[in-house]
Amino acid sequence: MLYKTKGVVLNYLKYGETSIIVRIYTEAFGLQSYIINGVRSAKAKNKIALFQPLTLLDLVVYHRQQTELHRIKELKCNEPFKSIPFDFRKSGMALFITELLVKTIKREEENGPLFEFLHHSIQVLDHLEDNFSNFHLQFMLKLSFFLGFAPGTAEELYNQVHPAGNAANFAMEEKQVLESLLNQGFDNDLRMPSAQRKAILKNILMFYQLHFDNFGELKSLGVLQEVMGG
Image (tube, rainbow, N blue to C red; front, side, top):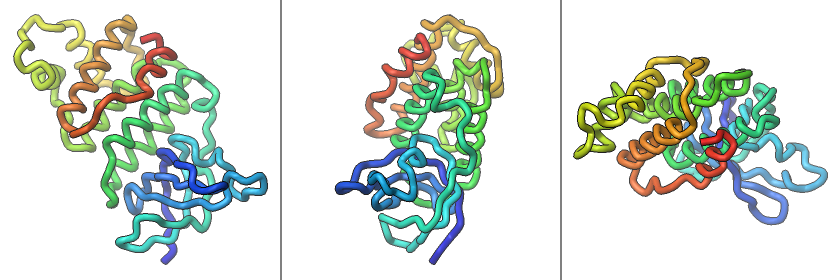
């Protein structure tokens, strides 16, 4: 049957000479994989740019239960990006967020609140003109809520990450900043040294590693820290 749904592109793999298999987090069906034939040919109807990380799509798809690979009948860009592909800092952040989502979102089922969070967050990142240096930190903290393991406070996060060493005076400044990140919106103007941002990111990543088996290292982390200066 045919269904209409919105989707957020995560990534794609080359398949054969001219085709790809693209993973899309959809509003109607959760995480799904679609085969797109001929998209890498010169005469392709659908351009490969439509399948870049975090692209927002409107889709008409064929969907059958118990099928791992589906097909798309129609697609168009839901909201063309204004800045993400053209700002190297945002592009680096998008790669990092995409890899994070690939490692953490596995379920092939509808999750409306999670989809709305992803869709809205990507729009916010694209529209922010400044004050987005902490976006990836807040995105990770907010995402953990939808994945079911959000820390209530900065102290709670550090208790989990450093169970034997989180004394009252341990990383006090970092915890104060993290507490602010937990309670502020994406458009905050919270300033911090790059070394502190790097330390907070490291602790949030450790927090994720506690909750996901085989989470491992994110290959995009180096790119993110290079473009964001820490």
